[in-house]
Length: 168
Image (cartoon, rainbow, N blue to C red; front, side, top):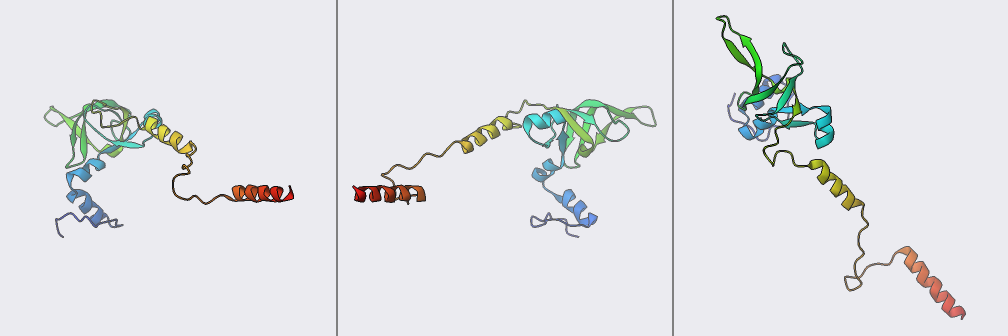
């Protein structure tokens, strides 16, 4: 099989092709593979379901041996799509401790690291402003602009006015 990444690839049922796509993807796409779902209160606040994980985020482990534990993310490996969490360690055969690399799909973000201003702007407020703008009535064009076809109601009023003038 070719090692090159295909930009035309859409989807496949075959796990072999799915693994190949993920393994050969460029880093800007692999960043999306380390996205973690948000807790319920963060979902309501930011109106997003998941976010790419960053160093400093506090996460809760949802699956596996350490289920229910929380910790801060210390390192993100984009190439292998794994994350290291502070305090999540296992002991080796010789007695030394090693940090475990966790899959992002088994995590949930509890608090976000918002030091980066571009990460999550106040999307909720922006969306509300856009909705309000759409609900405002549109201003009518001035008479000096291009010809505007009169509505049915306006035409009926004009015809009623002409009839009344003829009666007088």
